[in-house]
Amino acid sequence: MDQPLILLADDEAPITCVVGQRLEAAGYALMVARDGVEAFELATTRLPRAVITDLQMPRMSGLELATRLKETPTTTHVPIILLTARGYILTPEQMARTNIRHLISKPFSAKDVLKRLTELLGGAAQGVAA
Image 1 (cartoon, rainbow, N blue to C red):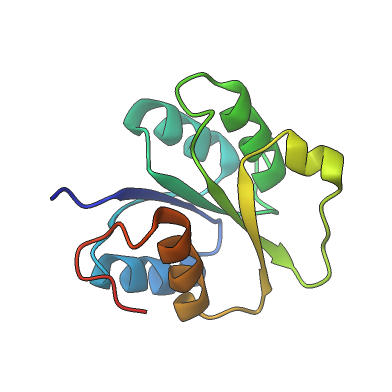
Image 2 (tube, one colour):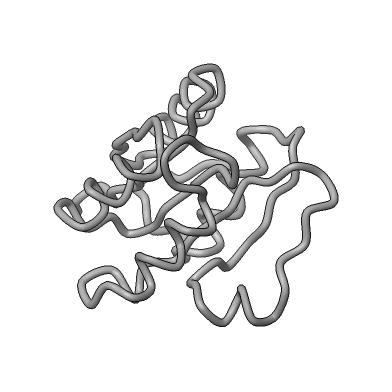
């Protein structure tokens, strides 16, 4: 079975490092983007099973990324987990324009992100361990 490919987009290296290590240890294949534009390019060329993105990133926010992915035929189905500042709330209109399935407020643990991703994909990775 192939490892599900996950796109992790965040401009903070410590977050991509810690979360990325946890995802790879759980059996996911990983690609990392440092900003929203790079994330969009990777998502539309490599077609990940899911996207985990920070809300606040250079060049394109996580919300803009989620909206553009929903509008793009090849990525319209890709589920998204949005990492946000505590207390950030999306309106129903914003949610309707995206495939954001979970909001996770900072600070969070890599274990929390893995748990949400595993639920989202139905335990899709080999040897997934929360």
